Image 1 (cartoon, rainbow, N blue to C red):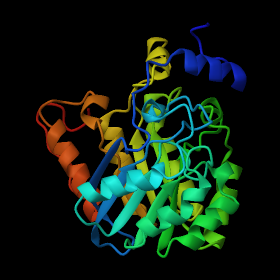
Image 2 (tube, rainbow, N blue to C red; image 1 turned 90 degrees about the horizontal axis):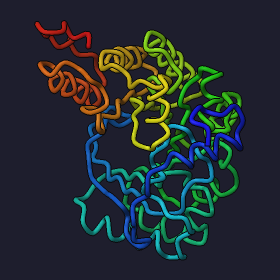
Image 3 (cartoon, helix red, strand yellow; image 1 turned 180 degrees about the vertical axis):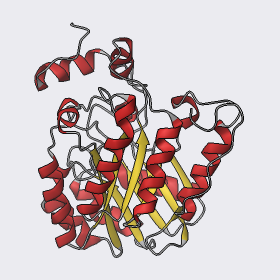
Length: 321
């Protein structure tokens, strides 16, 4: 198997799969993780959000940067397993106002979430004011509307925009164009479903000095498409493929100052909420040890308050690492 990234989709799938470490061993009747955290709502309230990471069959797409497959199964879960997972998580968690049902792929993939479970799932989220799921744009069809009609609260769908850099978006193996994203966004809007966009900060093949520019353009595009929220995800290694690219100089994690500047730009647009995914950020960005923790704390406060805070002063690096 060649160690350089192939130019065509079928070869890319094979290459990506060949780089993978083993996946985790999971119970199909238990979520692989769950938590409650605070988030700034669309009305600028701080609300509690329960996030349940559902265990289900792997997404059919093999995106180059994705490491979520590690917590997936190779077979479809039996009917009733997803509602059982939700029951288990909610029995362990404190009460919350909103719920995220994230499934390491697409909620509307019938091989991941059995459609016969939709009514039972809707019943279990009925006490929340908002239900947030994730999906590939190509799967926003009748199953999306069916689930919307079942849930008695506001439905929100998170879609991975990733980047508006056209050549790099194609190389991510997502099998999605910007036009497809825009059409899917309009479909959600016309059906009164809110949109959240996931944006990568410095995806593979992107130069460090271009990362901020393309993140800003991606934020612009997301809000032009009607997104009510955008989450900036600092691109990380951990799936085998990214490490292989890094060895060939084709992937470098983003610097923390790029992430900070992108967050400030997005919040400053005042077109929707902008969050930075802080998960594992301490190991992604090789920032200055003197100020790293304080800068992450600043980003956390910006996430919650949706306001731009003064940069952290650092006599060691000047806050530019």
